[in-house]
Image (cartoon, rainbow, N blue to C red; front, top):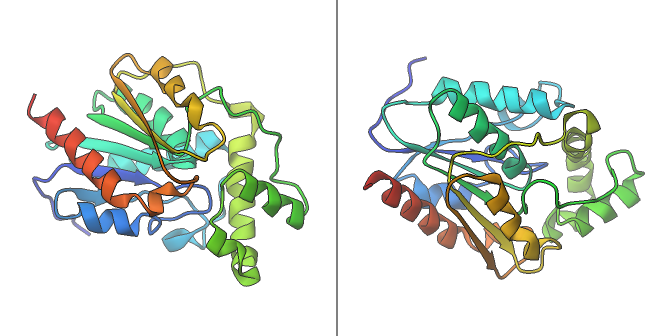
Length: 240
């Protein structure tokens, strides 16, 4: 099926653990008039529910990279945005796209302080009660979902798969820096929010960091702010 091309810049939205292509719906509604919105999705969820979840971060990066290349319209600029797991994957995806000589104009990372900061024991194989207690403590699931047992049952295998993917010790974040500018945002009550300037060590370009009110899911209350940030970054990049 042929894609309809557009002159609008592209934005690739990378979902968090347990998320899918619909995780950013309010943000998409704010941005769709200005961007071609691309929503790569990992197997085991959403439109790819029938596919087995990936268990290796390298496989996840390769999978999303293939989706980006397939939908990338090279005559327009683009930006990569990822939240939490999406930010972890997005950092290495920026590096991969730089090697393809098709770097994004900016990388927006939210809900993650950059490589080398988080030091938490693996949780993917914990019993259900302990697992969800740790997920909640890490800010990996919203309070709304925690209230409904049927939702926990639905999300449990997906969350276990995503956390297991990230906890796999054979594929930790490589010692790299990207050439792409970074804009990082975290919620004030996130455990590692005060470490957000760590991102500056991982780019050769500019790095701006902000802390806003909220927890790990501050994005749900701050989509207007995030959409304005993204529009401003793209406008600044394209007028240079």
